Length: 202
Image (cartoon, rainbow, N blue to C red; front, top):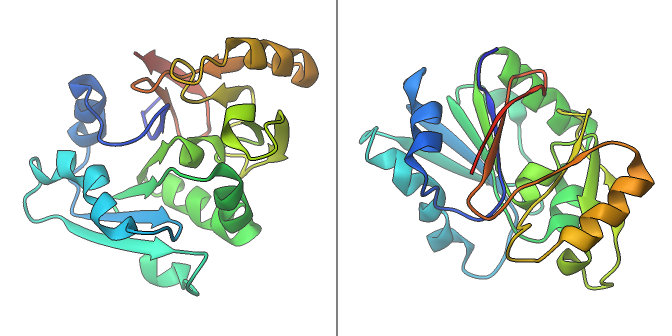
């Protein structure tokens, strides 16, 4: 089983060197594509995603794609070595990225050996089902939404420590009948390309 999917429980940058080493060790990274959504001042924030890789690969080429504001030709973005799906408003990310075209693209890239990192909302939407915490939406309700289905045997809970989300997670576990893996702000769940869990790094 080869590590290919990295589900980060919080926001960038990645501070744990064990996680960084697993991402950079088996493949040279020349091009990173970051999928994000528009928000005020989004551009300077992008450096937080890439700075940790810049030190390993000084000639890094980085592209930022905003699917909510531009038409994207996925066929012209097949040359990435690493794909990052950013964090932010989970429901907006789900509305923007959970569709057949994006799923096909991600599965194709995983099959090519490309690594995929999700941060917070970007981690959540990779699941078949997405648990949206009451801390993560304006209705302050537990929500279960459909995701991309890259992994399916479990759900994840992000920002588990800073959102103090244990009681909510326990309630959701009763509703969905599959385990929910809690991810703290600096935790990472590592999966293979088929969505099988390999290890959790705290």
